[in-house]
Image (cartoon, rainbow, N blue to C red; front, side, top):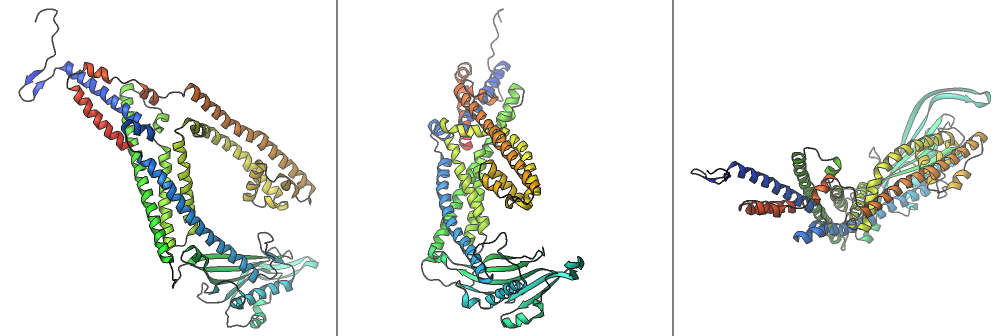
Length: 563
């Protein structure tokens, strides 16, 4: 070879495998292959982070998930409205029966509960009259009740009343001499009164000779059955109910006041023999078919969103491996979480709740189950999530995206702030319950105190809270003023203002970012790098365009799967 002439790296013939390129050309091919992979990954990432409209303009891909979500919103909302109307009838029937029972079995009931108890008596004569009044009303139920009621069997499979009294085992009491001799062990005596026994025999029974100084309480329990006929007007099958009622005469305080509680627990049971003419059965079949269609729609949405998350995780794995291989460092956690689409997670949760709720609704409609409360919670929460998910599509527009970005930016700071403010709030809650509980209705228990303080933070019912403090103790009254004024001043003028300031600061930051540009992460910088595909094609061998086409086709298919 002449001096100064560089040797050419030409292919050599190999009898076994044909042409064989030299090492320098193989290195060039490997380098070009890695560049092609990088370009394919960049295009896949760009396509993944496009919105449905951009994906349609880029590759004419129909946004099936978007259309499915719109259809699901209509279907789920319609289903919820129909079930809500039906559930209102059930709740109204239970509440109206409870009110009717109080008027039927409580002597002198005014129509409004005195407190957490229904009414009260203050003399022995009134106590006896209230007990025998309930017994007599039960005996005459079919002649006086306006409802579709009948007698039901109790736990012992017997029809009738069960009366139990609790009292101290024995003792004597002389308040004038300040003398007390009592056994604190509690005895419970019960008797069953059936309909065959006359009321006079009940009154003459020694069981009802009460010693009030050691009496704790008297419980009268009985079961009634009823049929809800108002569902027929809504073209639904009627429900059969069993009401477990209990009247409690509470004398545990021995304060001269016996509190009378009335409790009614309604249980829905399948009617044993229904013979209803008309179009109710056909309407039930239509409703069941509609619920089945909702399940199919949600199942399809669940599958598509789950597949998108799985393929997004695969794409993240590709990006993490490439970034570590090329730049010799790991991707930050913020970029890694960009691949986890929170809206898809929300849709999956919503779909699961809708499917479970729809199955329960179908069983309730077929009268195989009666758990209305659980079904309403599932369907109501799923509908909430479905409508919240609409914000995702509004976020594609800059004017609406401010809300989402502000919530994302302020959420960590707000949570930390609430954790600190919550400690102060709990301190005021316990303090108010201990000190003001005996003197104020709104501070009787912890739950009520927390609700009262939350109302005060929002400026609600302030004067009533101040005015209802009983002035029986000057020290407690003065403490209540200090307590309420300090709480209102601290939370409204300081803590609430700081809370609003945190959100306002995040909003101002987002507005500046929208004007001047958001800080770029590693992922965003990688996506903005210019494509060098034309440069590769100029320097590569004649075989490279074929390789690029094959790789591009594989990348397109992968991107379609991700979407």
